[in-house]
Image 1: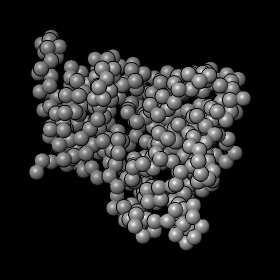
Image 2: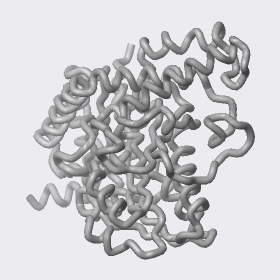
Image 3: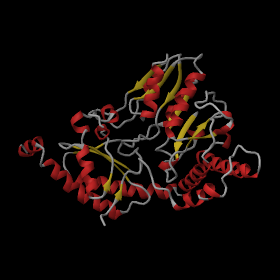
Image 4: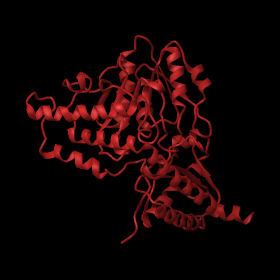
Length: 392
């Protein structure tokens, strides 16, 4: 049987056994609707409340500040559209960055077509914003700053606490997409000074199709989904009880083992980076060298295409992803890589490998060994590489 190594934990994670075990009864035995007042419903409602408490405790919030969603993208949409429409009488200006997830960028582009103005901040070569540029971008019409906690491509961690201080000084709401942060960095919403923060279950060994958003007490925002009175009349739709139960358990496990998890990922990440840099030439590490996701390795190989690299890795059982959008049918490279100043040619040779709790040192050895062979083979087909190599 061909060896299979999964190194795309930032895309999704497997459900841990402890999580699945807690979910199982809610598929067949405890199947009540949490909005029902009889015992079946009360059992489901109790499970929701328990999961809500678990998540609130993990981030330093209260349970009344946690609302369940269908995932991270929905939560991004709710936070940004909700603040925009609820505060339109105060202003119509939003500040974000050029390196956000498309769930943020596309919402901002939508709002621009509907009477709002958006400032897209630059980032430096590591993907970090300039706090002075942020301050200069604020106007008397600014109602929201939305900046991602941990970048989903290059793994860079933004100075969230400092951004929160800037927002508070000017009386502006601050939202951060923390989908890649939860379970990988320590989070205290009060200390960070955020007003809205969203998460996704399937990034932390929980089920897909469920997420949550922290909404600070007193923050006014319009609902995104109208209908019933679920989630304290702020998010209509019958809650996905089994998935929410699993999400709550996944969060609890993530917080309990945060230090060990980070240490494990850091060790394997650094081993992988070292192995790549020592064995392959013409390679560039993207993202901040230290302020980065503990399991993220994002590199660009010159003289090769990311799509060919991914397919070749898959043939030897290694699953990774590319920062280039070419794999989705676009010829344009990643907007994140463009924002940090890479050329199109270099950006097209990008590779993101993210390690997780089930990754081993043997896996990393196998990846380094095979990656060198694959890169060498692909470069042999590049006339440009041959010319550069011949000129050394």
